[in-house]
Length: 109
Image 1 (cartoon, helix red, strand yellow):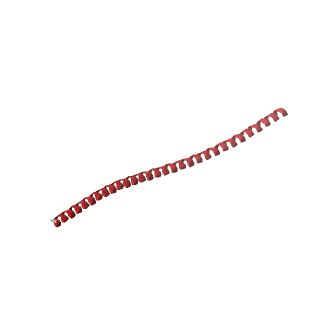
Image 2 (tube, rainbow, N blue to C red):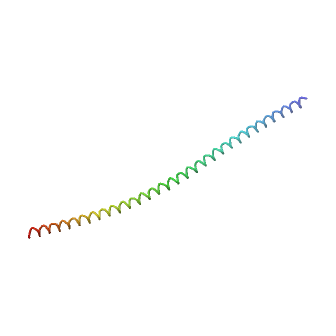
Image 3 (spheres, one colour):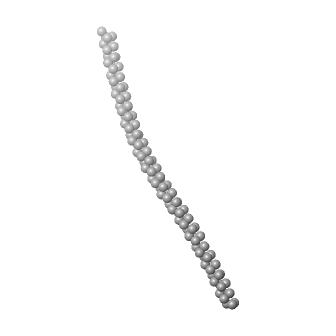
């Protein structure tokens, strides 16, 4: 009877320990699953952030290219204005010279 009671107690203790181990294993698996979900979410966030960074870099490069294009256009326009201004000044001087010549002729006559 004592042996049977001892064997039963040992069996119950082993069953309890087995149940505790199973519960611990289930909890560990649940934590692992949650951690995997969090890692997956963070990886997704990181990929999305990398995509946004790449898009921002592309937009920045496009803006730089556009700014350079506009700067070149502005330089071209400034040169045109400068050339036209120089031509206008030259024409003005020619006209002033013609006017002076006419005045001189008139005064000589």
